[in-house]
Length: 194
Image (cartoon, rainbow, N blue to C red; front, side, top):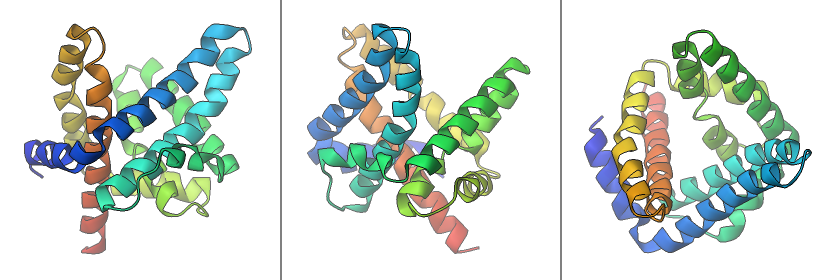
């Protein structure tokens, strides 16, 4: 896959929705980060909010790349399959941390392998957490290096965003998420043609 072309396409798809997408990503970031700063129970609250809100981002950006209705409220759709998303988030977090402790590389592989889980749940909210994790792993089989390369291509843009008094980061996050949703759509299309 031509990753530069995918990144250009993501910018084009995002362009009419950029401010809404920035708002969605900003609320996601604040909702996940702020509770941890408030008190001792804040970290648990952040943990409980992160998975459903991550799924909400999946709903939002899948709708965006499919040309469907994009609404701010999609961010909160991730709370509907609550048990599934909490189990997925907990397992992904735990396995990624264990992998990072075991020489870093296994953690990166695990994170990449399960990175499509939220898009899969967004497509089928009735799916079990095991099936979502398995499908993500199968979907990324043979594509983890390319997916890593796609994520790495955004690092210079994040650094540039940091140089713009952090404001630029909020423009890069929606672009990155749109590119990942497009990548998911491409993987799904390839899977259907196999």
